[in-house]
Length: 292
Image (cartoon, rainbow, N blue to C red):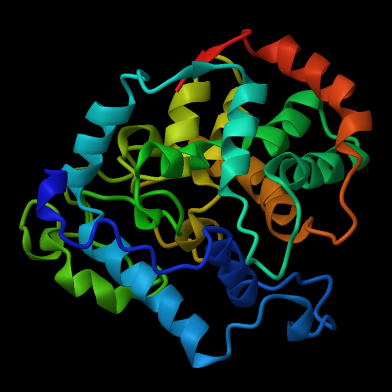
């Protein structure tokens, strides 16, 4: 099915981190509202606005129910590469963009910023590990996936798209918007069926969630799968699909989200000094190698 996407290779963002910086503009740190926009990447100029809009045009046009089913078939066989977590981090380091003016951190340091902020607040070690792992699904870029199928705000497919999703107007070009199976409030789902029965748009969140299901606590899996589901954990747009259990578990998603968004600082963590701690932590929960 990929072959029909003649725009598949377009990469509108200068780096995949631009999406995260755009999220910061939409959801600034409530405890740091006096921070000037200049301290974050500035998206007020037309060029940057245009690249983010183009990213979401592609994302919202091509993230269909059938597309997600296809990606599950392609990637959830976990036959791309078998490697340790440390090999995966090294692999991900090849995504560092030397032209990015906002950070010179490699992926290990970037991941440790999140996890060290969590550890400093005294959370359980599995929570710390979740912060360390949460972006590893971005290795999808290195398996040939376009940016719009790796990052971006996530949303359910198979039902009507909420107008609370960023740039909702771009869903008009999504075939599911014209498909009677998928364009109603519940679509293929039942009221309050629970998110475990709902397919989410494809990206690094869903991919890593599926990889980590055998190894991490349920709370951690919710954090991983839904940390980009802003239309729900910021706008409550999909309460009609969520179960009572989902609402309870989203308390953990809400605990995780500020660490993901607001932990970036200019002084990098000392990755060399911290590595023994993380080696022990990874070994506690994960096998020596994992299939990606």
